[in-house]
Image 1 (spheres, one colour):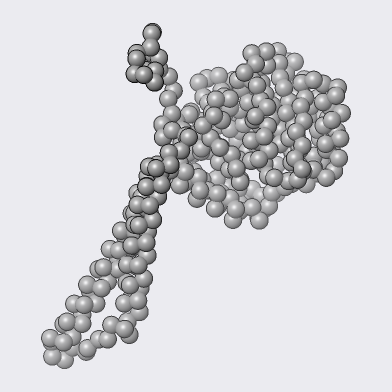
Image 2 (cartoon, rainbow, N blue to C red; image 1 turned 90 degrees about the vertical axis):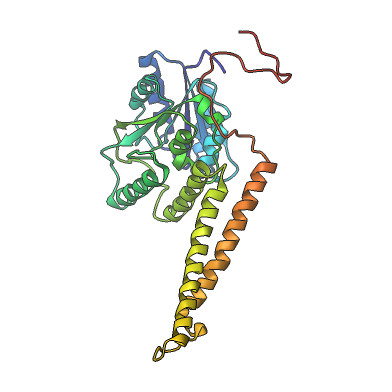
Length: 332
């Protein structure tokens, strides 16, 4: 990791040709005023508006600028993942290219990071977007807070600062870029947020809309499983399975008692189990319960036999060297 570069600024983009030159100019001004050396990594995620030509021109004039071009649109998570492989600074800052996130906010993010945090997320406190974007975002953030137990006002803000090492322990794919703070927090890193200024969009069009909500919800379920049950899937599947078995079993016991009493007590209207809807619900619950319990056991066996390359823990510091492979104690 290069010690000559202070900040790696990673910018994924799609059809943002109108703002690229201005963005790089403002980033250079902020770096100069902060007395920091930077590198700017622009990842073109399949643009069709001439963005790549502008990136090539900018990179030819400024050696601090590097461009990466995808053959087609692969998504923001893929763009971030590709850009991270090129980052060489100890601090990585991600931001969008539309200039709604202002480069002038970068020193404030880094200052908060240097207070001992590992991830600082921007919070668009006064968001300059129409209501049909703000309201779904509010509901989505509330849901993410509830499921992940990480309380942030704006999980999906593109403006964030990280210590480079956090990306050694998380993997980005699909739409996981929305949940980077949650994934980072699940590995024991310290996460916080600060309010940042948000400008109205002056160029281009938004790439986000209502169609992304179902995908975001499904990815949120994936994040919940990865952060809460990655090493113990049977606790989730088994718990649901046992609850289903309990419901089915108690229902059958109740039906059996009713059937018996109807035969024993004079005047009691006899019941026919096959005519009761709850009889079929109980059978279905028992079948589903057994399947879920078995799935949980199989998932545990898979984890036990195919150990993931990512450990189940994350070490922050140590006061001495770890033992060698031969079991010898290393020197202090």
